Structure formats: C-alpha cells, structure tokens
Length: 206
Ligand SMILES: Nc1nc2c(ncn2[C@@H]2O[C@H](COP(=O)(O)OP(=O)(O)OP(=O)(O)O)[C@@H](O)[C@H]2O)c(=O)[nH]1
Ligand SMILES: [Zn+2]
Image (cartoon, rainbow, N blue to C red):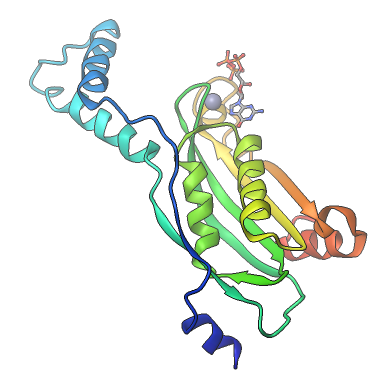
C-alpha cells in the first residue's frame, strides 16, 4: 500500500476530541462589556455603540471556543521513521494578562512511531489550545504534550514565533518584536542530531 492510499483508506484510530471548557455566559458577557464601556466614559446605549456589547461578547466567545474534531490516525505501514514537519502554520491566541491577541506562526513536527497523523490535525490541535486565555509558553507546551500523549511518537517538537499586541501596541510598544518558544519531547529533545535537524528545518537555528 502506498502512503497516499494509507492516508485515504483506513479510518481506524479515529476518536473525537472534546475539550473541557466552561461555557461562556453570553448575556453576562454582554452586560460586562456595557459596564466596561460605561466605566471608560462611553455610552453603550448611544447611537454608535448599541451593538458593541453584543459584538464583543460574540467575538470573545468565538475566540475562546475550542472546536471539536475527529482525530484520525493511521498505521505507519511504510515504517516511515523520519521527521514529519508542518511549518509556518498561522496561530492566534489571546494573552491572559491583557486579553489582547498574540499571533504568528507555529512549526510542529514529530518522529512517527506506530501511527501517523492526518496532517490537518496538527493545525487542529494547535487551534484547540490557542482558543484560550494563554501565555505563549503554556500554549507551546500543551500542543507538544498533547501530541506526545495521544500519538505516542518517538519525538515531538513545537516552535511558536509570535508578536504580542500587548507588547507592540501599548506598554513598551516594541512593534515587530517577536517571541520564540519551543517544547520538545523524546528523541527531538534528547538526540542531538534529531534536535538539530528539527531546529534547522524550522529555520530558527541548527
Ligand atoms: N512570559 C510571557 N509573558 C507575557 C506573555 N504575554 C504577555 N506577557 C507579559 O506579561 C507581563 C505582565 O506584566 P505586568 O507588569 O503585570 O503588566 P503590565 O504592567 O501591563 O506590563 P507592561 O506590559 O510591561 O506594561 C508583561 O511583561 C507582558 O509582556 C506571554 O505569552 N508569556
Ligand atoms: Zn499581554
């Protein structure tokens, strides 16, 4: 069986990924946004702001709601044992300190063991944890830990490079400054050659 066939045919190893997340109380969020506008000296009932509490509550609900998905894995019939790496995956999340976005790219790779993963699932796993109030370090680690636990590969590496609006639009106003974080497991952490290859291919070193 070719790799392409093995990616389209078997559906074994499919399970539904659910995220335990406290439901957003939308009416309470709308009231809170109206209160915030009032506290900021604005009139939420005025002609320009009447829809704003509803829109802001809806926007935060969307940004914080993790999508459910089916995690599809396939037997590694080919015995593929080199790095699988998806680079420059767009990522956006919300900083838990200021509730402002941070965004950039993620590079996610793994060294397959007995199973391989549908490539889009790397993006879905990232999204699962990014739709939360986050710090970049935790987001990076959660994606790496999740892949290690659910796919049991021989190694996992996650790098995120992001710009934080709380650091570029306000405060120190370091516009364009990017923060890089990484989390590694297994051979990508412990084997020098694999680690070096991973960082070289992500373009951040090696
Ligand atoms: N480690 C880490 N820090 C973050 C992240 N996002 C924002 N921060 C930082 O969180 C810190 C919060 O610091 P505080 O001093 O409590 O907040 P602040 O007075 O608004 O800080 P300034 O941004 O320096 O004005 C700031 O230094 C932010 O740059 C992140 O993902 N990881
Ligand atoms: Zn922040």
